[in-house]
Image (spheres, rainbow, N blue to C red):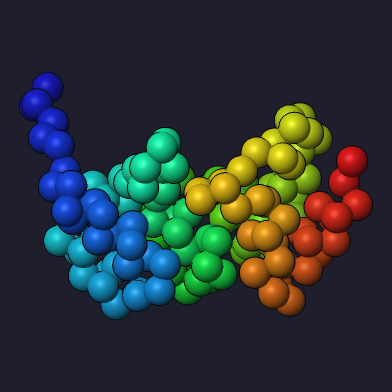
Length: 131
């Protein structure tokens, strides 16, 4: 097996940072280095964030969908923002405490659904009523 090389940290930081708002640059960086797709950046104090996490809490469905299509590991926060009610329900039925686990930057799950707008309203309503 070939030895894996660490990703360039500046590239990881830029990739995650740009995933908050710049689809064009995300595409450029991912074209240059496919291994970025699931890379995570620690903003400090264990505040780890992936590009998908960044797109998710910013409501950037275009970036989130692009990343998932390219192989990003979908998570509960992305599912909530994208309005994927069945995914959110399935996870919370098995792990109800996940409702209160903070996402990147401490942003709660319900805030991800809220920023998803009309497409995620069913998830937002479900999370508001979920006990």
